[in-house]
Amino acid sequence: MIYKIKMNKDDYFRISNKIISSNLVINDDEVTFEIEGGSFNILKRTNYEFKIIESMKSKVLRFFSRYGLLITGILFLFSILYMNIYRVKKIEFNRETPINHEIEYRIKSSYKKLLCFDFCSLNYKEFSRDMQKTYFEYPFINVSCKNNVISVYIANVDEANYTIDTPVIGDIVAKKDGVVDVFYVYSGKSMVSKNKYVREGDLLIEGNNSVRGLVMATTYDKMEIEIMKKINLEQVTDETSSYYDLSLFNMNFSIGKKKSYDLFDKEESSVFNLFDFFSLKKIAETKKNAIIKTYSIDTALEEAKKRIEEDFDTHISNSLEKIIAITNTKTVETEDSYTFTFIVKKYESIGTLSVKE
Image 1 (cartoon, rainbow, N blue to C red):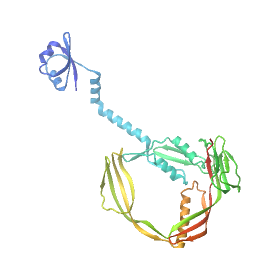
Image 2 (cartoon, one colour):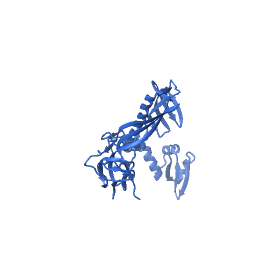
Image 3 (tube, rainbow, N blue to C red):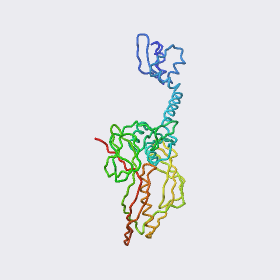
Image 4 (cartoon, rainbow, N blue to C red):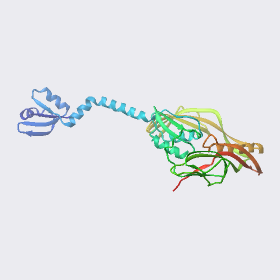
């Protein structure tokens, strides 16, 4: 530490050869100079009078040397409290709907990981509005966070006490032909009635300042599915190998890895993450075997129907939607494959948003 000293000029020159000083200023009978800790201790042991002149810099240094640890602790505590505002423990939905997994995926895509915690800085009001625009078939969607739990409220399609707080400007038109069954108009003017046949592009709900609603109809689709007689598959086994992956400045180290598989499914979960410079992940690899699967005409037919059902399930937007019937109308067999033609009868939402310019 540097000390700024003022003392008698004659006294200073009597001891000047014993200390190391700098920035000497002579003013009449007094001198001002700076010395470090060792020379300051020598000066204190003499009988000469002197005065310490404290500069702002020295005051600040002395303050932080005395209270620096306390200040650091307080700042660390406030940092933890501030970070805790954005920490997420879990996501809760008020009920099961087909769009839960999509909303959950969008929320988790915004996560940032620090140490072993997830943090989310979403603007929940704006995110709620975006979800209401995306899923206009639902009366109301609200996403909020309290006590580190993100809560997602999705109103029932027939719920009476809904709130329209996010205007969706445009019209709802038919995305395919169908016979209208039920419809729910939350905002806008209905242009349909029960048992009305509508064609693709027909106006279903007319919007003025806002449009929201759900139109359910019976539809018919012609679909062709080709199934190869022999296909190469990867079959998951019960054999699993677990280990830890340590990442340090983009260098990875496997800890506790005893087995390696040519084919495997990999799952990983974060144990610790410090700004991606230092992280620890738990890895689980499940072995897979390569197999050749053959289809007869009967098993190929069942596989084709299964693919139609799985594809439908990935695109449903509400729990009312379902496949009513899958009817095989034609089968073509070649040396390598079967091609099936189906008429698929569905009960589905046929509305799509047509935004007004």
